[in-house]
Amino acid sequence: MAYASAEARQELLDALAVAIDDIGQALADLGAAYEQLDEQNADRLEAELFGPVQVAYGRSKRTHAEFAARHGLASRAFEGSAAGLPSTGAHGFIDDAVRAAAEADGGLSALQDSPLAAEVGDVELRNGLRDVRQLLGSVRQRAQGLQRTLGR
Image (cartoon, one colour):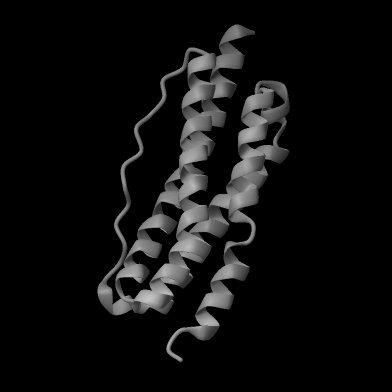
């Protein structure tokens, strides 16, 4: 039984790692968008999108590392992602970031709803997943608000 639990916990960690990679991609895309905006819009992007996604990234990495440590599993290092070509433009980068954040949120939702989270997860893991999803939950709406004013 212990082997099955360790295997299930590793599966949880692996699923969480996929979401963390998606959040990292969203950060890279938002960083690229930031570079293409004027100061006022860049500051707004940073406050409304980059900041919350960055906090979600940090919280998800901490959740991953702490869960691994509590259960004697190996944690992994997360590398930064690269954004696309500059010709993508600020709107394109923001759209890409929204897609990546939505994929991460979807993966975390599936993880929360999976029997694994209930069977071999723990309170700290479930709280971490909830916190990250709360941070990612309004990314699309905030991005749409920002994009409506870009270029005006």
